[in-house]
Length: 281
Image (cartoon, rainbow, N blue to C red):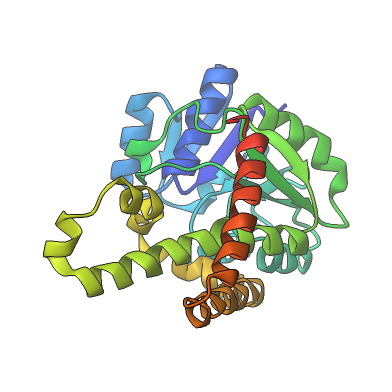
């Protein structure tokens, strides 16, 4: 469906798209756009056929995937009008959608559909990329008003990579991921920050699996999350406000336990729903 794909940003997600595309369609031509060392590694690993450090290498692509950090993706998109053929499609893999969809809507000659694969890994960078990263994971697509005719083709491409396409508005996407992805990340990082400050090195040595499991996300690199937080500020602020209210109620009700019972009961109910949705129960 796309003979030539250019991927700008060949880290965990971009590299995994390259691997998965070459695995699914061996004849597809993948161009990696990133630093020279990463491009060389991608070509040697068979995840890309060609590569360059400049976005101009995407000029003959049928599909361009923007896989850099969120705000960098917006800057890259602004360079594409006039570079690509009118039949080329552009998508991205950023964790927030409203700002890039709005920016691309101001470029009417650019056929753009936002995307966000809900998949990741404990490590980042191309060295962590793998062909099965997207298998069975949701991949959200946020088409604008002007280029929905490309949606079925992009859905088929996503499914070919192993993802499960879901279509929604950019605004709904950002509200949902603020709750299910961004809030857990900030919460885990804040929790580990507070625990470390309270317990110190000696206390952390005594911790068990509960703290390890709860704070798995706290190892995420901050430079990625600066962009995500800045481009989803209002939904994330609302999610944090709701969490702060709940924590405040727990703090104020420590003596009688009623609030604790209510929160724990609700938490069990929603965790059961989460496990059921994932097929883990």
